[in-house]
Length: 370
Ligand SMILES: *Cc1c(COP(=O)(O)O)cnc(C)c1O
Image 1 (cartoon, rainbow, N blue to C red):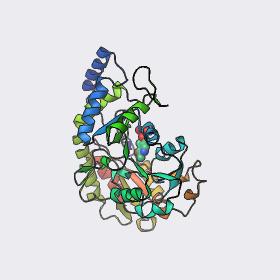
Image 2 (cartoon, rainbow, N blue to C red):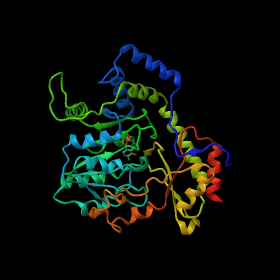
Image 3 (cartoon, rainbow, N blue to C red):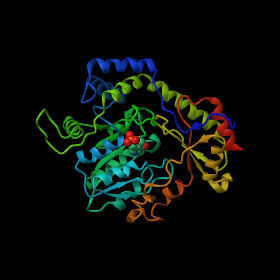
Image 4 (cartoon, rainbow, N blue to C red):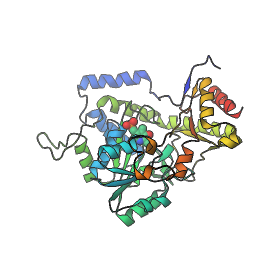
C-alpha cells in the first residue's frame, strides 16, 4: 500500500478536455473575456434554472461573494455566526469591520445551534450568518423566526451546498441571501468561483453593481463597489460542469453509502446520516472519533492514514474562534462553546470525490477498523 499513489481528501471533477477547448475557441472568437459576456449570461441563466432560484449573481470566488453580500445588505455592528466553518466565513465579517459573535453548534449535524442564538443578540446585532456545514441544511425555519423577532437579516454561507433541497425546496431560497463557492475543491467548480442568490430584482441589480465597481452604465457610478466579477473562462467551465453535476453527485452518493456500510459497526466512530426529506450533495464525509471508545485519537487516526498515503483533512480544526485574530473576542473564550470545542477535536473528513474507486475506499475502511 505504501508505494501506492496518494489519496487526497478531494480531487476536482473536470469535464472532458476537448469540450473545454471548444469553449475556449468561442472566447477567442468573441474576444470577450469578462464583463458579463455571452458565457457569463448563459451560465447565470442555466445555473439559476438548475438550482431552482430566481436571481443569482456570479462572482470570482466565494469569499468576495460573502464580503459583497454583507455590503449589499449594509450589515454593521455585530453578526452572530458559527466557529465551525472555513475561516473565510468570519474573515468576510472582519473585512466589513463587523464584530463576529460566535455561537455554539448543535452536536448532531454541527450547524449553528438555533437554541443558543437568542442569548447572543445585543442592540448591536444586525444579522445572523450561519453555514450549512457539510451541505446539511441548518434549521432554517427556527433561524428565520428568531431573525423576524429581532429584525435581523440572515445571510447563509451555502458554500458546501449545491442543489440541496428540503422537501423539494432549494435550501438556497431561505434567508435574505445565500452565498456559494465554486472553488476547485467544492462539489461544483469553475476553477475558482462563487455566487450570491437573492430573491428580488432590485437586490440582484444592487449586487451586480457592487461586484463591478458600482458601475451602472458607462459613466455612472452609483456606489463604491469592488471588482468581484466572474470571467468568461470560469463561466464557460461552469456551463460544462452543469452537464455532469447530477452524475457526479450520484457517484458521491454511492461512495458515501459504501463508506456507511463498511463503517457502520466501528465502536467509537460516528458519521452523519441523510436528513429526512433532504436531497443531499454529499460534499464531505466527516467521521467523528471518540478516543476512549475507539482506542485511538483523531490525530492518531489522521497520522496512521497518512502513513499509508491517505490524506484525510480535519475540517474543521481548529475552530475559527481559536485563530489568533479572533481568540481575543469574548464569545471565543474557552469553555463558551463546549460542543464545537469537543467536535473540532474529533472530526476527520475522509477522501470523497466522484472518481474515488472501490479499492482505496476499502483500504481506508480496513485501516480504520484494524
Ligand atoms: C470554500 C468556502 C468558502 C470560501 O470560498 P472561496 O470560493 O474559496 O473563496 C467560504 N465558506 C465556506 C464554508 C467554504 O467552504
